[in-house]
Image (cartoon, rainbow, N blue to C red; front, side, top):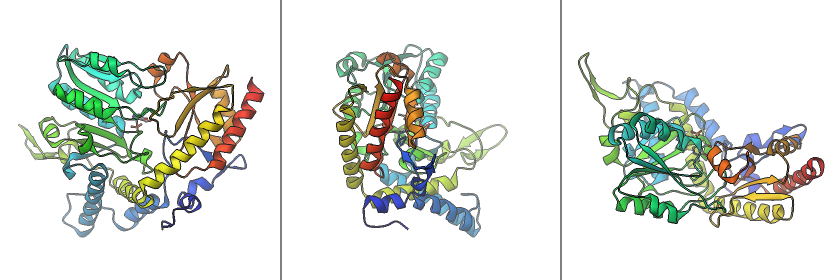
Length: 409
Ligand code: PLP
């Protein structure tokens, strides 16, 4: 069970993996932007589901099928509350942020965009928010436009103003950059796009793990995130879409669950959300994601943000003392992600030394090759913090960096 007192020790005890040792040392996990760790509450919810509830959903009149359906649909309701969606049926289960973006590109994009239409993304997108739009452009003859990035890792909003035009038919941007941690001014982007009646998709893969997102307040048309980044299971994610848009979009995949009637002559489709959920869904992981959201709310977003802020400020203070370190992405609005290089040293070598000291960071292009090209570097070292990390772990990182500087420079 969750320890109700919000001490870091109590919170860390909720995450069994944080007790692991690597190379005989207690493990420091600073790769949270790649995936969050799982509290017992999530692990237990999945186990409990398989041990006491599993049956296929929606189709069975039998007791256990109805119990599974109740749990599965309860999880959808929890996600709707989490995002403050107006309707539960605006929550579509996906395998993750990547599938959510592909779904919108392949359905809304194929149906409503035509040759010459412009799709606007930003220069700091993850490949997941670039490639699906490029594939659509290849197929339909649309044109991909890119909001450039300023040197400090913020979007060039003057350039955005001039790129947004009557030709723009869709805007898809990251709420938060995974490589740099920048929080983008998405409200302004949405307001300006809506003034021209252009729909906006927000890639929330790096937002929903750091702060609460209100899709109605933002007024975004689509929002995607992945369960595993919000301390839930892998293999499950969410697409939120406004009903009026989801209603007019064609289905994504065909199969069971997404139909109303089937004859060999014609199939009619189910209503929302099932129209977009062909086949047996990932029931257990949906239930796990619901439990993850419960857990985060129990910890409290105030606590989560304060702890991350404290860690980020401390890490920045300490890392800035190392004159060999070059920081990338120094936007005023950031989440707890630090991207950097040791001058003259390949990020992979830094990552390897840190790993041997039991510290997990990410190195490389972080699936943002165009962003790295803009910065003129092959990649960075990225340390990303979660609310269960500690100042002592940051001390270990700094100690590791000092060692790397000594050995590699
Ligand atoms: N968008 C951003 C900003 C991300 O950081 C990621 C993953 O790192 C994705 C999309 C893709 O997420 P997933 O691989 O869980 O689908």
